[in-house]
Length: 591
Image (cartoon, rainbow, N blue to C red; front, side, top):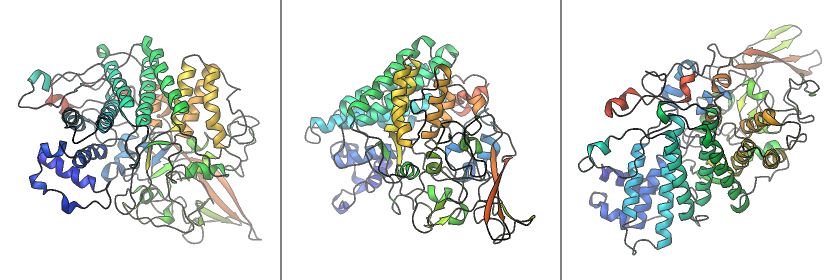
């Protein structure tokens, strides 16, 4: 197993070290453990293999039978899966899962990675000074503590308390009681995450001089900001059960909020990052944040290389007529569209006096709407996106291909949108259709960025009773977005302000694999994720003079109502794992 891991690590290294002459490397069948920890390149190769197996990449293809190419956000209220035959549609979204074992796209039991991380920490600490300088050694130890923290955070947000293992176990030497440990409490797991992030911050470099995609000290501080916010939310809004295996005592909430606020402030003040703001058109500016691959706002990202080591996000999400295959795997909901305020008033479309125009419903809206979503007649890759389902000529509605239905319209093909909207965020754009093939997408996956840190700070400050400070953190986000009214949310206070801060997070971080987890930690998922998804049917009208206008009709887009049940605030440990380790106790309501 160790030999296989090392060989895989060397293969992984080839993706990160262009131009390296592997003819000078020792034959793979002669590499020993001692070789790895006494060669900087081989050590880094082993670390890169761990990076590759982390669960953080939300652009990665979750396809196959489970999702049909969709990302995890189809499990939230942001979008539905376009394909009716997938478990994403008929199992996960209706809430029919988790009675015995988990499966895509939520489950992640990270002990394989954790063994490699603990094994690496033990061996790097013993490495000769001829291999690493003190600084190089500390930097790599910092990476490993960051990676360990991320693994435990990903499990805590799924299962609550899990066994904390900080040594590389060996079935031949580890005592049985230690080899099959019980679950730690959820609080203990979050405290371990924070301890590792704080140590990583001390050990990691401010920036890696020549390698993107390696965690720096600000990535560790960002994880501290996020993880502490989760722990605080669970303490304030959750319930302690199973003697603390799930839930955190409410009295701990403010301490965790303060840790999150302090970490966020540290990044904002000392990290050297700025909000991306390079394009005068605010919708385009927001869209370019995710494809320009700048590092002014991006703190940590997963690197993808087009053609060489790419993903398939474009293949799975471009509008129907721009596709090579699949396409439109995520259909954004009308509920998301209605969440974007009217630009001129700062009010929502349903509010009295909002100035919402039913004849031009996507105009005069928060610019992030058009930076995130493609609506009818939006320009994309050199041509308009045509989403109308039919054409009315003198009272006769034509729904035929080529004459009536738009080239991207509802009903033109099973791969077309089911809601009347397409995702724009993270898609490559250009002057003509790109027809991007499978694994040919190269957009880096942003894992931490300054925009989230401002939102973390705003939420933590509010929960600590610091409303003015919360407004200070929200204002830069809304200003950068191009909003004009109520920039500091001065019209709201108390619970209403809290909900608007959460709402801001929903829009700013849409399709970044945050929404599903946010509504769970706030303990509002039973309402937010138990909805009848709606869409909008667009009808084109052509009058006798050839003039083109559109009308819009709301409809129920999904046959099965979306459901989230109380037990799903925690995912099941699963019977297979309990069979393997009878000290593991199942989460509430799954027995």
